[in-house]
Length: 262
Image (tube, rainbow, N blue to C red; front, side, top):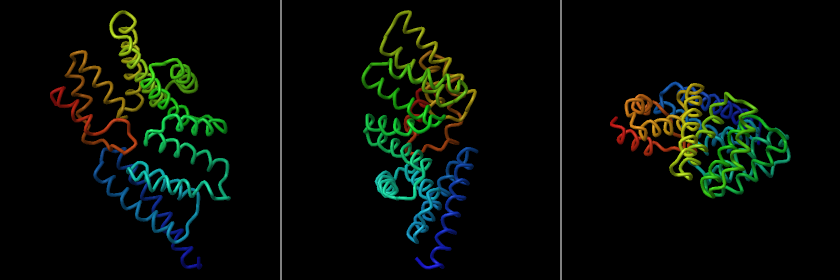
């Protein structure tokens, strides 16, 4: 790679990263269509930068994250597998890569592998991202198997780590809702539903635009016959950005809105 290409690769990479961040800001501020346009622009800039030879971990990681969010799962996998062969990755780079690869495994239906992969990241460092992501995986595992204890044990540890983290509070809400569903009727089921509702309310207070919380909290209100509250929550649905790795889809949100009379 010549000097000119190296400069151009770095310039495109930095511009891609800034555009990516700008897209995040637009998504967080309720402008999903503008965010989508920025993300598509960032993808092209990332691709150009890497084609010109950019191997900066920050740029590759940003590109991989955006590919996952935009549903380019094959490209994301190929890029992450390429990154895994690089000799220049630091321990922190490997930490981020394992989290991203675990998300890819989860998304393509390899839940056990995802738990194993992010577990290796956790061996290096436990932070809020690991706790909330692995907590989500364990909740999904519990929903599949009906064995709630591992998920409850892990998410209670996550809650001890940060009892104000919106994603962890949401995980706890989903877990107790699933436990209530498995229990069926009776006092224990009612207690689980009450706990789920409380955790969803706490998650919503911390992060009012968190899509999973909006959906599950609105669904609980709807199931309880309180469609007015459900509609209040769902009223902002058109300002939300639904990434490809979001566990709740726009179609699910719209179906619930229709049921609640929005």
